[in-house]
Image 1: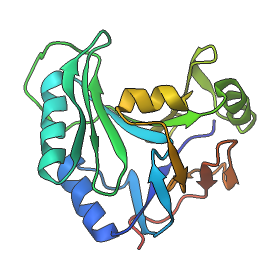
Image 2: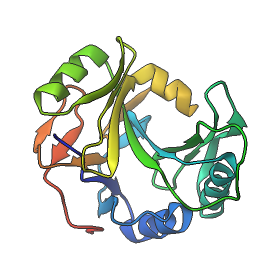
Image 3: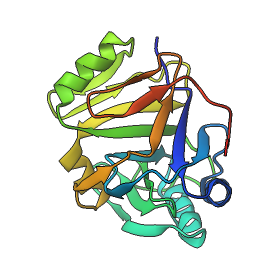
Image 4: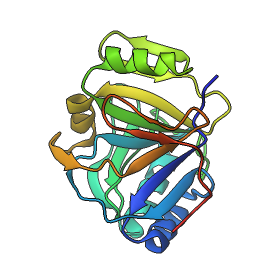
Amino acid sequence: MTSIDSITLDVADPTAAQHFYTTAFGLDTQLRLRASQAATTGFRGFTLSLTVARPATVDGFVDAALAAGATALKPAAKSLWGYGGVVQAPDGTIWKIATSAKKDTGPATREIDRIVLLLGVADVGASKRFYVERGLAVAKSFGPVYVEFATGSGPVQLALYKRRALAKDAGVSPDGTGSHRIAIGSAAGPFADPDGFAWELPQPAHTS
């Protein structure tokens, strides 16, 4: 089964970005960083989500991110599906921290249950077929709206959402141009998907 081994973010300052992600989320081997000045404006077409066990952990990660320099896009709040909030890292990457639980059953921790890469795509059905042809297994599918793939042995799960809907969920405008500033590390690479997201062979951690 095809899996994602890592995510590489193209950032202006890898040292500063590494400090942010270590301080805010405790991320290390799951996330690669490399220097890039690739032109980009507005919404980059993706979000990264941290799924955690309880609301107190959501609050802890959101607070840590804001203290480390992130910008609040959506304050943490209850919803029909659970509890969560959205922040934008100093490098521009949008992160959602969420839980399906609506009440705390214990104290806050720094444990992350899942990391999910959500790609905002033009045609969910076409992108789903593209990825299935490259060995990804569908875990959940809701028609032309949303698709979630099985994680396999990798630490990052992939999901597809309509671009406009993903931007709305993140609290930003769907407009954006230029580089996505992200590369997906997998043994399935290298290739580019229908929306221009680049897959490549896994890279060493924190290259600059």
